Length: 340
Ligand code: NAD
Ligand code: MG
Ligand code: MG
Ligand code: MG
Ligand code: MG
Image (cartoon, rainbow, N blue to C red):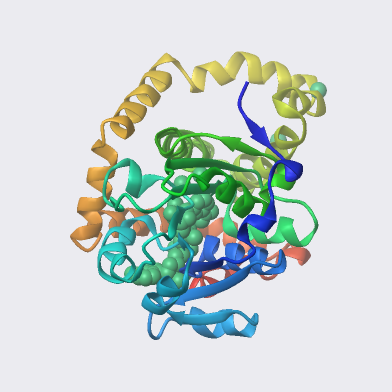
């Protein structure tokens, strides 16, 4: 059984005389800064010169400094820039300004697991990885709940690293939901696998293949969109609430029988064998090398794949149909809200 921690297992007083520097104010950054601040923790946000997030963070009443200054003030430095920029950000702006005993925190173990960042021996190296997107980490906190997280310590220089990590998770609201002990290696490998094989890669391509199959057979794209994409959220909500069993209970017996006999024709032994290959590329560093090499070259492959994904016909149909939802007027504005 995993080690799971809840609110009573963590002590916010461990953060009492400490300042937390949050580097970056994107999806995770804004949520960490605001949740910790609302939990009574001293927070400073470190941002690049000219970052459009400076105004947003200041509007929330947060203290904002340059990355160098925020790092220099931080007893805890949480690095929430994109994974692919963390290596140079750490070498150039963070490492030279760290307090000798500052604890270095991450929300994903990528740069430690693949040795892109190797902090010196005096620093605690800690992980608080929320199991949800940043905007949900903030929204659940505000409504009195929390997003579960997994935590790890790679280097315990202070002897207090676990207590510090649990306290941070509590400030974030994660111990309200439950926090599971892991390692940087387990978090990194399972997070990459989950997003590639199932959550992002698996689901997106499953939806696209379903949409293509229906429209190529002559069915209306709007109908196909509802059947293979819109309803997915409703199904996933049921799984999230009560497992696959609750989803099967709520669907018709027709749907449930079709699930049993047709699901295994889509997700076959070959699919599982591909999943094992994906896992192996993650474990031996092949995926990390490919991602970072492309990023270092200016992300040509990434950019081309993103453009191809955005040009898929289901995106156009979906945009038009979502305009019909009266409650959904702002839902397609996310790109404007995503400024760096
Ligand atoms: P993001 O892309 O939303 O935001 C990154 C922020 O970093 C930007 O908003 C900006 O403030 C700053 N930034 C961007 N480029 C920079 C640069 N070159 N130099 C300095 N600062 C820069 O990132 P994110 O998705 O919040 O990811 C941050 C970390 O959290 C990553 O390690 C990621 O794996 C992890 N994580 C993300 C999620 C998620 O849902 N997004 C979930 C769990 C863990
Ligand atoms: Mg994840
Ligand atoms: Mg991830
Ligand atoms: Mg249906
Ligand atoms: Mg049923």
